[in-house]
Amino acid sequence: MTPDVVRVLPELRISHIEDAPALAPATVYYLRENYDVVGVPVPDGFHRIGLPALLAALVRSRARVLEAPEPLWMRFLPRWLALVVVWRLGGVLRGVRRRTVVYAMEHNDIAVLIGGPRGVPRVVEWSFRIGLGLCVRLLVDRICFATEPSRDAYLRLSGVHRVEHAVVLELQAARPQASVRVPRRGRVAFVGVLEERKGLRYLVRAWERVERAFPSAELVLGGVGALEEELRAWAAARPEQRRVVGRLGHDAVHELMTTSDVVVVPSIPWGRSREQVCLPVLEGLSNGCTVVVTDQTGIAGWLREHGHHVVDLHDLGDRFVVGLADALTRAVRAPLDRSAVLDSLPDPSGVVRSNRYLHG
Image (cartoon, rainbow, N blue to C red):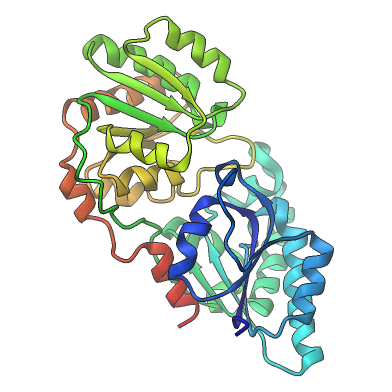
C-alpha cells in the first residue's frame, strides 16, 4: 500500500534512516547524501532524485501529506517554494485537499540569514519577514519546532503565529547499551567536521590549559575536514593526551562516546550558519556523556538546566578560550552521573514525538 505521506530531505543523514521505522510511513525523496551514510544500505522507500524529477513526482503523488524541509534553510529556500507550490497545485489538479507539515530548527537572526554577519538594511529584513511569513501562512498547515529559539525565530515572520505549531525538544532517547561500558576517566571526545566553524582552533588553545591541570586527560578528535593535517601535527606533539582518529563510522562514534566522560562541541558563528542543535551533542547525551558546548546550540537552556556546561560567546578571543578551558576542566574533574544523564532524556525521542504531533 502506498504511504499517505511524502517526506522530502535536502540531505540524507544516518539519523533519517535510523528514525524511519518509528515515524509515520512515508515515501522519502532526498537530493544528496551526507558523508555519514557512505556505505550504509538505504532502505526501500528512500529515493535519491533530482529537483525536476522531484517536482514531477509531487504532482503525480497520491499522498495527502507533504513533510517539507524548513523554509529558513536559506540555500534551499527557492527550491522549498517550488516544491510546496507544486504540491498544492497538484492537489488542485487532482481535486484533493493536500496538507503540508514542517519540522523546523533554524534559530539564527533573520538579518544574518539573509546577509551574513554584516546583516541587511531594515527595509530588506522587514520585506523578507512579510514575504516569507505570507508564504508560510498560506502554504504550511502545521509546524513542529525542535527548540524554543527556533520557535521564536519563526514567529518573527509575519503571520506565522497563526499557523498551528508546537515545540518538541529534539533529544534522543537513551541508548540501552550506554550504561554498560565504563568510560576512561578524563577522556573528552569531539566528533564532527574538522573545520573552523566548530571552534577547533579555540579548543586547541583551551585544551593546552586543561592538560596542564589534568596530565592524564585525553582529547580524541573524530572527523575529517580542512583542519585535519593541522590538528594531526598538534596532536603528534603530545600523543598521550591528544589523538586525531579521522572519519568514524556510526558504530565507532558510539563506541568512542561510551568510553568517554565528556563530549565537547565548541561551535562558533560562521557566516550565515549557526549551530541548530548538533547531532554529536545529542549522541553524547544518549550515551550518558557530560556535554560542553557554546551557547550557539538551540538546546543551550536545557543543557544548563540539567547540569551540563554552556560557554557564552561574549567574544572570540582570550575570554572565550579561558571560559572554554574552565568548562572543560570542571567537566573532566566532575562529570555528571551517567545514569542521571540517561534518565533526563525522553522516551520516545523528540524526533518520534514531533512526528506524532505533525501527523496527529
